[in-house]
Length: 212
Image (tube, rainbow, N blue to C red; front, top):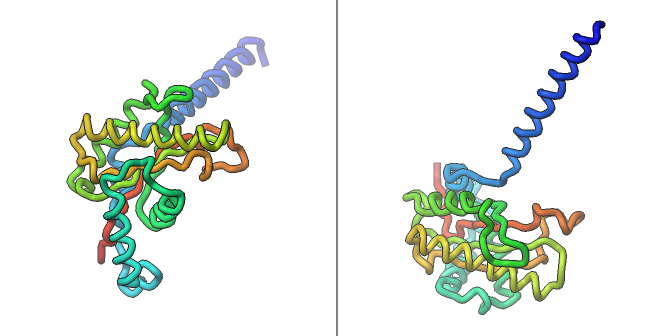
């Protein structure tokens, strides 16, 4: 093989590697489209005959609805540990999505790089298919730092998202329930410092199961 061919082959390989790297960087910006958020938060169809389970119990359902109503217009800091855990338990059964919305270091200010991500969320929650439901906006931090600091930070960050959605998209404050979990519910507990743990989870608490 001539030196020219060796050089040409290396150039092609380097070009391919750079293209792949650029693609990965673009995919890693964390922005989720409004359409994808809408899809994740919409009620999922329930096939006939598969309605068994705790959510099919009318008494449990009524209790859940009553609890969600008590959360509307509540201050984030007024939620007890028990209430936060009950929200998490109910949220696990509802349509939800994790969004990689980043904030300035040790701050509740949305970073410039995440402005589009919050705008996509605003567009989604303004969509007729979702508007009017009660949504939980849950803040999560990574595992670095003390529990009290991270708890306070996660609450302030969730409140920031709520204010943005109210101010910029006219969403009703009562439809947005904010809660902070600090570092208590890491997405990757094996790597507490991983940025994946710093996220905002949105849950459709009013989602009524669509029937086929």
